[in-house]
Length: 78
Image (cartoon, rainbow, N blue to C red; front, side, top):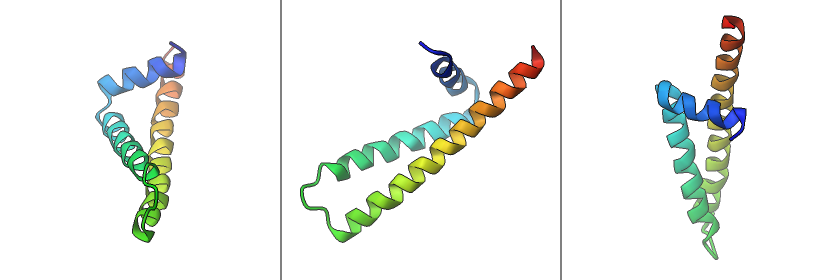
């Protein structure tokens, strides 16, 4: 397990905001998987897919920012 993965697991345990973002990211991932399995998605489903990809990326960016903030705070503490 690498350093990034250990940090993610730690934040899942101690940071409620990070935990909620991770849950949201997982929900987007699951729905995107459902949409990707459709042979002929409707216009609405195609739009939903585009929207979900953007939301998923935004959530990932937020998670990354929390991880970076935590790493910087830890570096100053040591």
